Image (cartoon, rainbow, N blue to C red; front, side, top):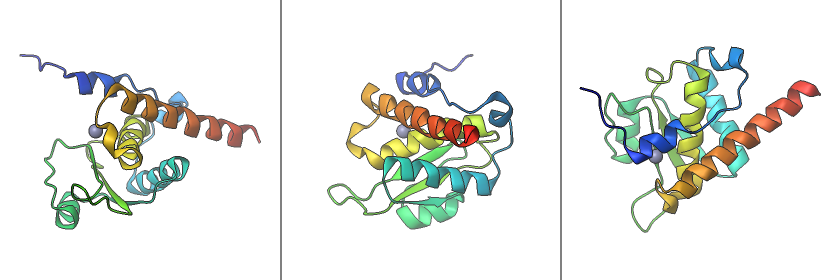
Amino acid sequence: MEAVETAVQRRHRRLRHRLPTGTANLPADPQWLLDRVLTYAEAAKVPVTVILDAQAYTARTGVPVTPLTAGDCYTGPPGDRAAVRVIYLSPVLLPTRGVAECVIAHEIMHARWPSYGHRPIAFQRAQELLDHVGAVAQLTVAA
Ligand SMILES: [Zn+2]
């Protein structure tokens, strides 16, 4: 039986990364994931810490992650936003840069705009980040 796609999953699926096809298909190794999150954090002007190990993330934040969790963002306990957000990414579930890019933009969106939840505006902001970082990359290539 086919799983029913939720509205949130559909909104996430509609995010478009701006990586060239050749780059999008490259493996997203751990160092690339760490560097890429920092690139997006800089673009969104939000300080983050990145953790690629599920147990370490749970130990740090108290938030459990399942083997199906590709990414998560911890912004602090309710009413007490952490100055530095903590982002978790699962290297196993993010095999290629193209897949990882959209999840990174999604989690950075949570870090930057915690109150947006998964509303359409949240995904609009995530897409703007993808477009912005993609445009900067194009300029770098052209220079
Ligand atoms: Zn989310």
